[in-house]
Length: 170
Image 1 (cartoon, rainbow, N blue to C red):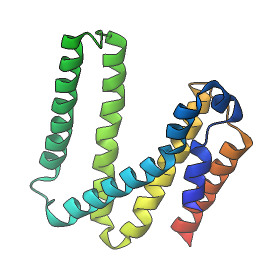
Image 2: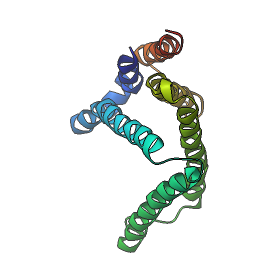
Image 3: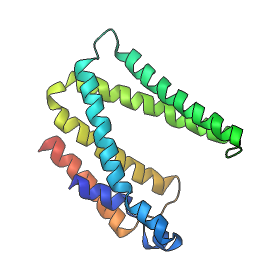
Image 4: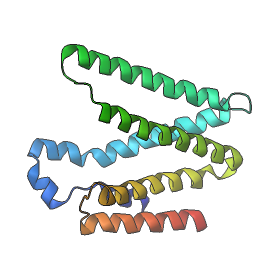
């Protein structure tokens, strides 16, 4: 049910499909698989690090190091794009990056705290977290970006809610 909800919420509407070429549509159709694999790898890494390396003395150091490394790599890529003329500076993009990065850091921090406090229940915590992200992202896309959700997308939202309920209370 959870996998179907991710697929349905990510699936572009017919209007979106008609505005893209066949080549782009192929890549868009791969988004759910990429999301599934990437999220699974990330969740596995987070749980592995939480179990094997995080303790009371180094909880924040790990996250700070991981986010600093990601920021450094991103900055190097951005500097390269500036030098080659492929990118122009945008203060709006900088502010949006910060606005996304800060909640992202704290969401991972909260997830690690919950995994630490309820380590025997990670098989429920991680899917609930992921389904919540899919649900929240879809609703924000409709609310803030005025993205029209198709009936299939709404079916995905309902499946996400049902999957969260079944995992949490089942």
